[in-house]
Image 1 (cartoon, rainbow, N blue to C red):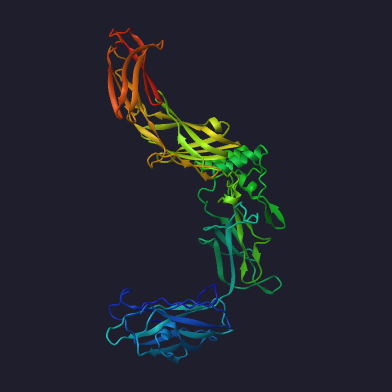
Image 2 (tube, one colour; image 1 turned 45 degrees about the horizontal axis):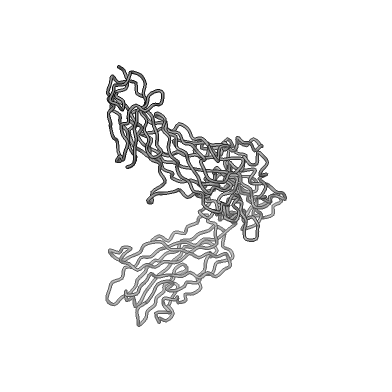
Length: 589
């Protein structure tokens, strides 16, 4: 095993750790006892305690050990060996303190034995070192097991060991990037606690020269370590570093129709978007207003609301603003002049006007009971199917998001229009939000409450054959003011509306007889009748219970009395549990 000294840049005090495999013949991770040295952090002029730990040895029968541990050579004596003391495993096993000796300036031998086997796992013993006051920042040194033997009177031992290094800390700049959110704590104060992972942080020296960049971790933290102290223009030794942030991924579900609703309310002076002030650099900014201006025009207009809805349904991927994020330091400066130095930042996401995620105390539109959503009865007119979306228990709704699944092979989306309770709302839809998924975003200036229709979905059947294909639509999810709605279900399945098959006559035109095919989405009572252009009943073809599926009946061109009717235009009308459809038939005689 090499004993070459290693120098490398590092930014944290002193670290000891081991990670090399040293084992007897045919050893593996499954048949060896492991020895390792844990990670220790220290500063110059400190005494550090380095544990040498052992894996669980219960049942192995270890009665003695012999270890040789070495470390690299550094000028001025980076570390000096002090002593070895017993650890919990030796003490709990009834063993005496280990014996040790220093083989040379950079190696020690440690041995121990007992009258009963070692029991347990954890620190076997501790090695004490002193870190010299002359240790230079960012210097690192390897430490390793030169030899490791565990003795068992009956079973040969395989030993796995790990080596590591020790490093000296220098200047450090660290901080946390958080996400602005608008909500109150139990004292009524606003606070921001959501960390931002993946934010791109840049470090510069006090002269503006780039030093390095990195992404924040899952808790929003960044850390630049092992930095050299810098001299200012006067020659005084100071640590001067500055930080900037320019990127962060967009949190899911943070830009919603509710944000568009807040923008519209601001436009008509129902909300001034100043509920959540943010102190910055001896002044105050208003994150809601910054987030609302998604086209960076300097004004908040209805166009901003439209762009937010388009982004929600994925009609656009970015806003006209070049940057989705705006970052502010949590203080009056983004620079530090001492070590270590902490610089925190808060991000404001364009389009997220209410500050995501919402917290219960700060909900602007809290409903007393969950809003319920379902489909109404579809209406068929030729190849067009109109399906209303109904709500119940709606309370002060200003923003709506709905995702609907449909069969793309049978239907194409014609439109999605706000109606009924939401007739004054702005509605944006994307039929290609995902394969077979229609996404609708709605926002209004004046919130609505109550029960009734809010949206009308219009579909077109793809050709005559599709008219005979039975299908359904289902509501995948829905939110009202960012709160999940209760999607009414039947037998544990999402709310779905059955698409019945309207009657199709063939041949049409006909010289006397035509076959009329139709589809029942479920077993139900169905009536199919023929009417003339004056609305008078000519013939009843079906009137009774019909099983689910596609069926065919024949009209022979005769009326209720069995007489052949005159040539002209007739209408085949189908009625089944709220579903109605009409097929025009041209009779040639």
